[in-house]
Image 1: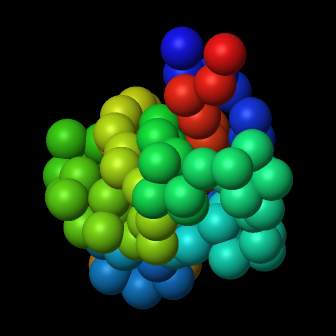
Image 2 (image 1 turned 30 degrees about the horizontal axis):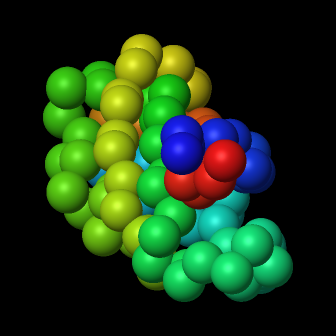
Length: 113
């Protein structure tokens, strides 16, 4: 058998004040996941924890993202997190703070023939 792509979920998250890329990344993945109720694993006779989720996050300052905090968002299965430069960084009027926007893509895979 081989892992095959079943679902692509996308989301956006922000940190309005503080410029924390991990907070924005976590919110982006939550946005992607919390709008769905996946039944594909059950429909194929597999437990939900058999899902493998490959997460890609696009956010400013990708090196500052705590990948374990992002991975902890997954309610089922196992996963990987890749963080790339992306999203948006929007400074406030006086330049003393920044709003960050992150984008998330979560590819759900199952081991099927």
